[in-house]
Image (tube, rainbow, N blue to C red; front, top):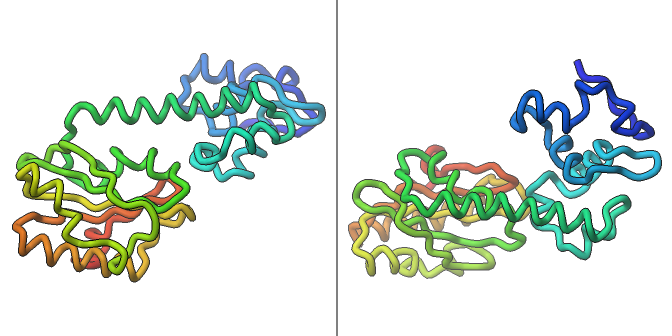
Length: 233
């Protein structure tokens, strides 16, 4: 069991087995908590608050890494114990993760489940501060061949022209799509408008012979599949 980290402690006052850097070296980064990973970037804390405690405060205040991803540099740098240098390190690390995610998508992955689809978009969409609607384009072997970023703003059946959801698939002679949009609130629970849009898209897809495989709602790093919930399908 780990010793409770008190805000007055410094990292060097912790047993070596409980210091984030030493734990990473011994066990690998996968075992570290979010606050421990962030503490390694911060390196030092402030008077009365070590790096781990500072990291825990930032994660609680901004809602985890996805919240930090959406936080402007000017806001983050003004937080007690952060400043411009640490803010730059945090946002640079977040962007590295984002670019790794994008690079992974350059290889056409096979989408065989909602989890596969969510993996391709969850990180980036969770960091958006406005509602976006994206269309995942799949070929006949269910390989992801592209993502069309279609709408920014309120996503519902009254503001979205359903025919536009299929425009790229028609142009590229594809036979299936997946709808995905985010909830900036962090709650991925589908709204009645989300369900209505899904139902309209599924019906239009049948007429166009383009199958709507799913509609994912992303929020706070999590997702809900409307297909799995039988909402609109």
